Length: 312
Image 1: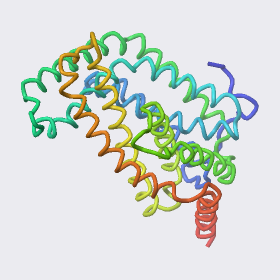
Image 2: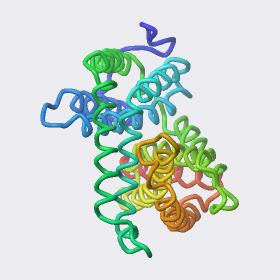
Image 3: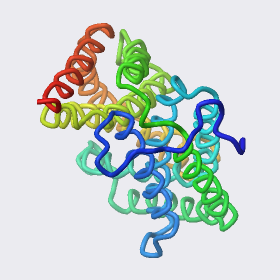
Image 4: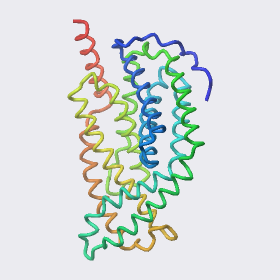
């Protein structure tokens, strides 16, 4: 990581009562860093819970860095990439957890299938994936990685205080919000049933980024923003479930821990995936109904209305 904060660096001068949009950005950055630190240091969390919470905080951070790379230049983009690399170091434990989540998702229809997949078989598969997750956590979420995460967060905390975040206006950020919205919208498949797992994974990544970026402007439209966030979260969940099922299927490949059940579980995975895709298609149609230019006009109007109300 570069030790400086670039040409746009400077000492933040906002106070607790700062109501500028840049003030929201600074408060969000501080909150994300604090949440990530808590995930690493909280002794009450299991390793699985800590990995989940760290990854969640880093996703929010990467979405913010994507927005800030427009007004601030190279350093936020570099920090976004470095956060992505840190997340990849935690991927082994996450893959096993994805398999466990998919197995839980399948349990009801597996027990009701004809012929059913027995509870004994499901419990054996669950144990194998749990053991795999534990081994991955021991090999990845090490003291060395925790130290690396803390070092990254130390640098991030210094950077956000040096960047002139309170000076960033909403109009500049609106361009970034619209760009993310457009990227997600362009990835919506023409034929959901035939969509490749990698394509759905890329769409989910953009939806996650869009959702976290939209959280930044929820104060502009609390009621509608809450509904938007809930809709985006439902779409994210459906796409995530498809990704989990794809990971579970990988664990049934030859020489993988769930290979003995491949023929039994493959039809269940396919059927459940279609259910998630049908729901995802409806959600995406509502969430991304507007064209990007219309979306930008709407969020710009909301900010203008908020500014007008604050001046009265």
